[in-house]
Image (cartoon, rainbow over all chains, first blue to last red; front, top):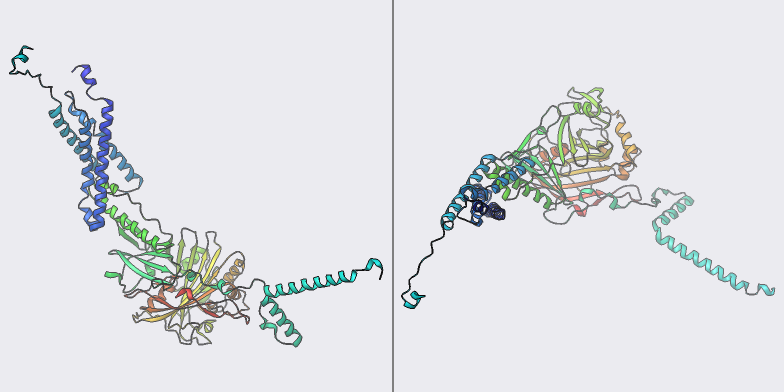
Length: 158
Length: 465
């Protein structure tokens, strides 16, 4: 891989754009699910919420990996780890924020570290999957120029 | 007439007219401004010249108190509605299997919610007994009962919140429910994300008021550092002790408990002594015209601010079968431990003296005075209804300054609980039990301002029914 190719592999602006998209996906996944849970609690009571607690937890990293990997420009030289760099910092940062909230409020959350690790792995898996698919779909060598033959004799002469 | 004096008579006449007019205007203005005072003075003048009694001529003080000055505070802002028709309305709701709240609404719209262990609170909020158990309070050698609401939320039995309105209490209840749900959510794997996404809930605010209990003997040692045995014993053979700060001679028997109510917001502490008396000094005044049969039971509360200064003195009693406007002639039928679930009327008499710098010396003096009546409880029960002037400076202060209410509660399902709650210092809100858990104030009176004959009459309290 030439230096020119590496320079075009992961530009800062592309990285920031991917992080923003991953963050948006994470927030939508987490708080969008929270809204749904609140609506569910109002409609069916608090007990109905207890069976859906996985939704914000898992929807957030899935959407983060999905959106982050979706907006990162794909190139033939995009490496697998670049999809992770473009998405995984978001769930890691969210875990730091959540841990801070829990600590500041004096609460205790069951399995906080494990649930954060699950989020990071899930986000990485989704991002890697999307990245692999996009690389396969858009990141290959350009097709060779095609030679056209025309039945018209004057075109062949041209 | 000299030339220079011409016209003088006209000027003098005009001056006389002006002076006369000013006098007339002044008299009219004075009579219209101080009619009672002038009438009283004229009455005294007539009485003095004719040799009559000037005592009935009324007061001549410039600042005559009015009946409004003696309206009991609890009913001052009462609104007419079915829901608030009682000075105290108690109901229960169940939070958990072993927890609950006693919620009290007052006539002025304020609400107090008190944590209990929910014992006696059955499905549907009905109550069978023991709405507020003194034995579960902490303090002294008793650690008290912790009430676990679930989710790690624990309060002490008797912790109380005060609210300005039922709406505020509703918000608090909703917040508590949400917080308990959040605590439950946090128990689940990954639940912290759901808790955060649903809106992080803060824990409920700390209670403003807490109750504790201590034995009388301990209270004397701990609170005042003094223990002053009178040398006498009560009927059960227990030694009597004198509280030099309260002026109360109480028997140090097992039942002589003191309820200590601490207001953490204001720093005030109220010491409530259960009192009872049978034929005690002054009891004939309470039961009416010397009929001292039976026993009167109630509470005597002294409230001190954070500096230790007395801010309020309250006498309170209850008895079954109240009669509006007076204390009646029926003898007392006080609780003997048996539970009576039949409906009844209860007459609650409350006399409240606000103590400030103007009268604190007098109150302190009265509290410090040793009473040599030689009875187990020698509180001046006459003070319960200070309707007439007294030679005793303290009783006269009550006559001049205290507010006194007499409220008849109807539909009291459990008279014994009702009266016992008052003995515990459960002021304003009484541990009313029963299926409906209500007590409607059907008749309310208060002592008005002194009249011309010096007597404070009972007046109907329209705001408290």
